[in-house]
Length: 320
Ligand code: PEP
Ligand code: MG
Image 1 (cartoon, rainbow, N blue to C red):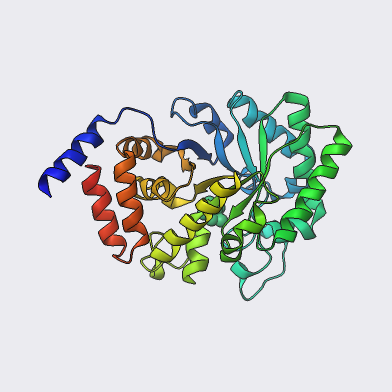
Image 2 (cartoon, rainbow, N blue to C red):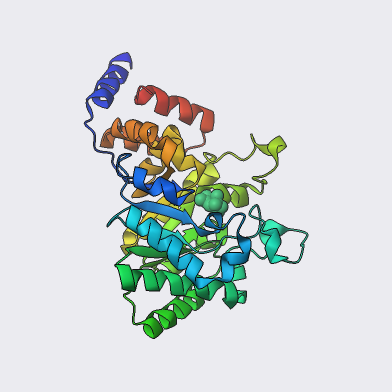
């Protein structure tokens, strides 16, 4: 056993700088876009558009504000792709200026795409600005919809996007869905008939699978994104995507944790979106994982040995 471990460690150290999955970045501010290349990220995997407007919520309905922001970011990353997530308001992302009605269960309520579909005054300026940036500037944008539960929500949003595209004589933009609601994960085969890509939002997926609030500090230990219910769900979505030829990436805090990133890669996601400051450590951990260690890690991640054991195994195997 010691010899096998020593060999695995030697392989880990020898693995040269190519991670087994594509790395993209999450950015919070346009000024970070220029740092992307130096960090070795292939574009922006998650541009949380609501964050661009924090403190300027009154501008959310202003198409030109969106247009300027998207153009600035697309230019800063040069020709790298930018996945623009349409407004994910609601739940933990409150926008007081919108005066949305209070509700008893905000995380189960008017969140993300549910709100966008009911509020064309918020949705259309975003879509129009994105297609204009692609048309006028050649911005390589992809549109991703958050908090999608039913396939009809996606098809309705996609129909609206295509209408905007036609009206503006703009190029096609890939359209995708964040897999963060268990219903979406369990029915991923329905979605892959319609979407261009999927991205697993591990923060919300863990919250909803474990029925544990992501915002209550007293429950921080209970919301474990390496729980076997989460890893099995990720594996299932990755397999469904792979069978249907649809790329499945993952984002959220788990992707920014070196151990979590390796587990996600082992489970079969093909790209990870990581917050810029975490990219170097995540890249280093991923580069240590060869095909054989990834198989071992996948088997343990899907087994019931528990996340503490899994974390220990990854750390030892990759000499982290
Ligand atoms: C997620 O849910 O994992 C995610 C990336 O989105 P957010 O944390 O912004 O909800
Ligand atoms: Mg989310």
